[in-house]
Length: 299
Image (cartoon, rainbow, N blue to C red; front, side):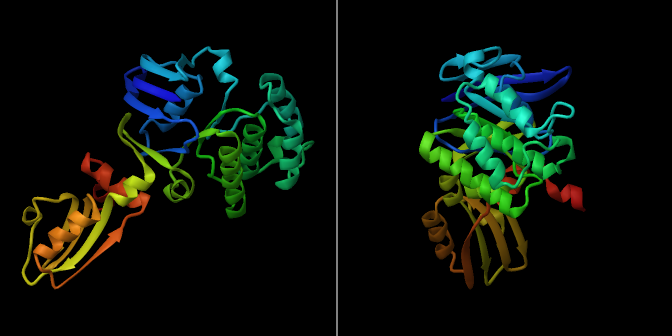
């Protein structure tokens, strides 16, 4: 299990990660989402042991990560900024990782390279961005690790490759119980694969929740009333966003569907419907509540 307790990381006067407390259970697919500069990449580097927390505790199975060779051999980090040794090939990279990870599966590496139509003898510098990401994913899957920390893994991949990568991760979760932690701006991709989501904002974590529970707890209501209404007319509801144009109302809410239905029926609207929210809509509404208002950027 990964456990972060009040983890803070600073770069001079910039607080990149601010007192993050969270738990990631084994076998979960944990998605990290957040606004630009929220601290997602920094948190992944902390998890991978590339960086050391300035304050707080960050452990895997009760052991600190930084400069812990035993723990690092159980983890693989895929950076958003791909770097490879000059003039190296995937085969040379395989040899390098095989010397580090005792459970590296060479046969699986070559099988996956063939499946993705990648030449193991070709220089990686001649690969496209998407092909480089594929090589990194293949190395991570072949390394036989328990934890994979992936930063924008799906960025640059074509739709077929994205589905293939999701399938590989799902297979290893089912067969070996690996724990992927995936940071991404593509929230629709995370909806398809993650079962738990942590929302970062300005270095801190707004919430860390089970994705299914969160989706069931977030709704949009569209309604028409015989007379204008305001947010104050619904004191029993947890309203994140309220928009009214005359008697037409659109609300984004937290809460169970039964509670929302009861509140709407009690006010006898002319028409109303309850709609589910996507992860992207939830992200926009939650960050807007704490001051990251997209309307300020657009108007």
